[in-house]
Amino acid sequence: MASASAAVRGIRGAALVGGKILDDVLIGIDPSGVGKIVSVARARSGSALAARARRVEGLIVPGYVDVHLHGAGGHDVLGPGGARALLMASRGMKSPEREVVAALRGLAVETAKHGYAAILPATVSLPVESLRLWVRAVGVARAEQHDELRRGRARDEAIILGANSEGPSISHARKGAHDPVVLISGAEMLRAMEDRPSDWSPLRLVTVAPELKGGEDLIRALAKRKIVVSVGHSTATFEQANAAWAAGATSTTHLCNGMDPFHHRTPGLVGAALAHRSARVEMICDGVHVEGNVVKILADVLGSRLMVVSDACPVAGLGDGDFMLGSMPARVRGAHATLRDGTLVGAVSLVDVGVQNLIRFGVALPAAVAAASKTPADLLRTPELGRIAVGAAARLSTIDPTSGKLRGRVSF
Image 1 (cartoon, helix red, strand yellow):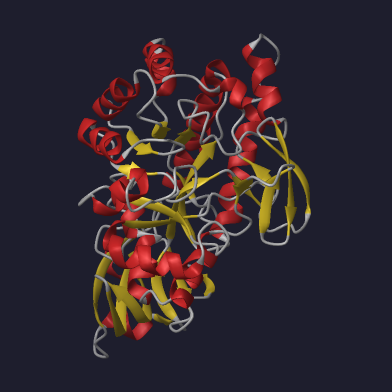
Image 2: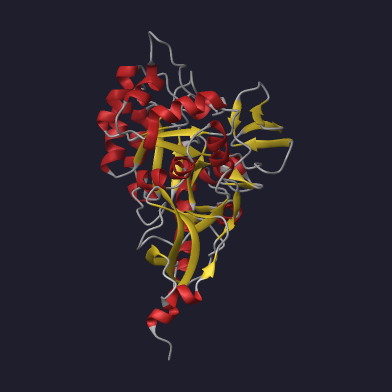
């Protein structure tokens, strides 16, 4: 009978550990269940694990954690019927829950191909009852996937961490591609969440405009439930943004997009995010939503608070074409996804490209990788993700050590 130590599998190569690139690292992995890292050490040629370890080319890095994406590869987080199917279900028609679950599992497979360890699927603003149905469906997808992961299955999927609700308590003035008809105040959102609170338990992150009526009360209530609050799609002043973080918000939704521009006399939400000492800050690093030189300037100021998100559209990776984002018709032309009036609606690339872009813009590779792995994992209080360390999930990828281009996932 094989010993427990013999069951541990080893991989060996250059790796990003603790923010440093180490030349020759031996990583021991327990392959049972989801797969856990059981040892991380400098390789020693005399050890039994080193003798049977598989040499990995490229730089081994933790898998990416994307806390804000609406879909990719043709998989819409709302399911093939989109917002309309959820609206019909809220009015007593057939629930699209199974279709939503299938779409989320398809998205989990698609994103894993891009080096993802985990995803937090995000919806655009929906009517409250539609949102409730969608959040419940995400909970079903998460539970079914996690059950399979415990049995050592679904390893070709990024882990579904829960639901991200981008709105609907956001500003009309900074709504971007969100349907203005469904936007509500913070007070209305709070009342909805107090009704059947268990339905909302899969929620992990909510974007809120704090200047709306009841905005700060909503933030306090969400924070009390340990739901991450991100300030965004907002006209908040410098003072209102700081009040939101004081009330319990801990993040900022896609900096520079969906908020008033920074001005030297009215710094607003952008200035407050840069000045804050602890609030994390999302940024879409596709080179379209924020120009590359600006990305580098902001990254230098933000340091370890920077999070790379994709904000990817369901059609990301499919090339030019038309699609629906929630209830809004949109189109992709080249690197731009827009509404018919030219409003940007999201990105057409994923976080692996964002990491490459950060490096190309001048950000050091360890910082670029951390912004797409450790920082978002820490935001969601999931220490088992986003790092190469004992006890962490063995969700690892390899990248080019110079450009950051993804080479592939590390199997075990």
